Image (spheres, rainbow, N blue to C red):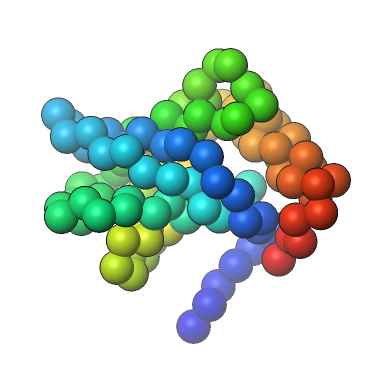
Amino acid sequence: MERRVGLRARTDFGVIARQGQRRARCRGIELGANGIVVDQGRSTRPLAERLLVDLELRLPERIRVLHAVARPVWSYGTQHALRFVRISDVDRLTLAEHMDLLRLRGVPLA
């Protein structure tokens, strides 16, 4: 069962996920207004071990890192869907602008 609300776009940018003292480098591969799908690569430990994950989103067109707190929704292999629980309005707007740039570059929105 697939439950999506709002537009989503395929993307590719760096994400740092922190859970306590543990830090994982990931790639943001799909983005929406309410959450993100990240690919953890070849990591041996699952990302979604805790209830909340601190995220640093490193968009290619921005110098400043965006911060968000997210909760895991699902995991499949190395991919993990995270729903934003806490993100500032400015950072949410920056993510929307990133999606607009992707659309202008010809990336289809789902």
